[in-house]
Image (cartoon, rainbow, N blue to C red; front, side):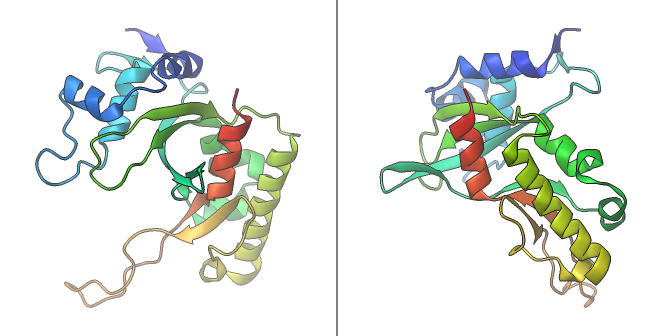
Length: 214
């Protein structure tokens, strides 16, 4: 079985910068909007193909694993800007209490993500070009990593001192702990759904990663 490492996947994806993912989806037989309802994962499926991750291909073994993430960009005052924040990983309160940043699932995920910037032309658009491919290849003593660690440490300390309910999307310069999931009352049971939260990369962090990418 052929193994595609993270570096190989990035190099494969970079060959397709400027190409329209919608056209490639049709070429690969991946449904986008043809049924009248958007297949939310279509960009990810196309990116996996472009990275070389077909059905009979394995990702690199543990320790070298990675995840492809498509991030929508749009033009604001003639400047390409991330359209939204990006989910990193769900927050497990007990794990967050126990693990420092460099031991955390959040850091492991950030290190493993291959960020793919995709142009957003509006909902159900006929085109979506691959703009750039980047990864968070920084040393642990890099200033940006130190600042992300400071965000994590602040959120972790707040959880330990004030509990899970105290976490809010307002905290953190680069990453935030935000509510994720449906929430509210379950109409079938009449009971309140449990509140779940996840670490998100703010749009400023997503933009920074692409700006510093080679």
